[in-house]
Image (cartoon, rainbow, N blue to C red; front, side):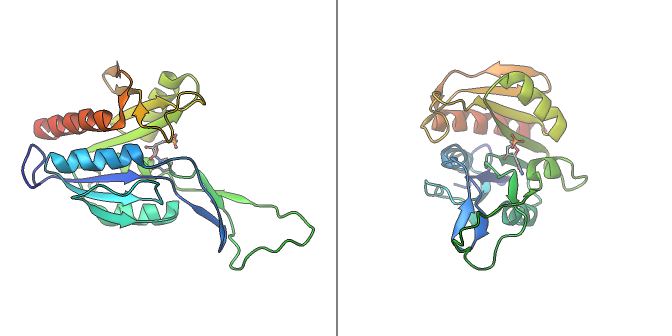
Length: 220
Ligand code: C5P
């Protein structure tokens, strides 16, 4: 570490799911394993970057050679991301929960015979927020888009809406085996158009993306 095309460059990666508490013992989560984000953190570190790795409760351990910041909720992830700025590039690979329970119970909800009703509140969109920053905006902001239908159209619209530079879109329909699996098949979408990357190991996707990030930072 400390050598390579990204030496001296500070980059941020978010990874893993978030857990949104219902009460002290229960939470709402998603199936993200953290595999793609972890592979990316590793690949960036291998190119010499100083990586701040903000991770939710993932199935896989964080990669070596990065600064690990562990969080549970989307709100905590947002705080950690802001605290990591300024960075030259930020990649948002985390599967942040869209909603949290509006008022998590401070004590365990008891079985009373009456069914609990959970009122939800929307979580902040961390990627959109960071992409919309002024002076503190990272030079390169990259998002992921997990879609189940009309992948390219939805992801391209998402790139524009969120204001990020690049988006990697993948089809997470049941049967693709991507979410929680070892392989990924992505569309790499920029302002200039779409590249279809073949199905490959998540480590290979990570190395390709890390190389593109290195190129972009060297040009910029
Ligand atoms: O809108 P959607 O969740 O599909 O967007 C996915 C992208 O946005 C990912 O890069 C994800 O990390 C990021 N995101 C975020 N904060 C949220 C929701 C999504 O940073 N609350």
